[in-house]
Image (cartoon, rainbow, N blue to C red; front, side, top):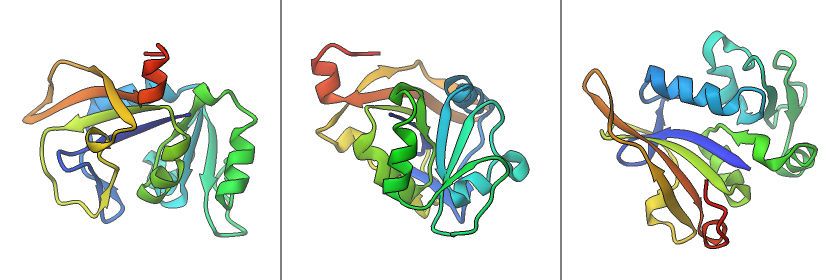
Length: 171
């Protein structure tokens, strides 16, 4: 499985149920990686998508504890067991975890590749992603040249599980 996230310099990802920053090239990269794939996100993340509806051109799966929840044509799962059973129906390379904080924490152990847009600024944040630079299990295998959007500096990075890299499965 893959995950895709945009983090600030403190690995912050959100503030009051909103993204910290909106960068057009980051959105484009997100679309390029996930189009035609399976995306799984928590209820609040999915409800916060543009237009408040599922992502077009993707199989959308929403993880929520709400039993009678509906979200457009999205598949609804209610716990990790149900989510993993549903995700097992797809090629794991086609699955992207898209947040939020609790969902990332739950699924990180099942992911092998992390597409991380790293913004070189510390925002006020109340939700965070695990610092992969401090993890012994992950290694950065790609780091783009510095990108800019107005005064925002950012980088597109790819992290992979260390064991995957040691086996020569580098992207």
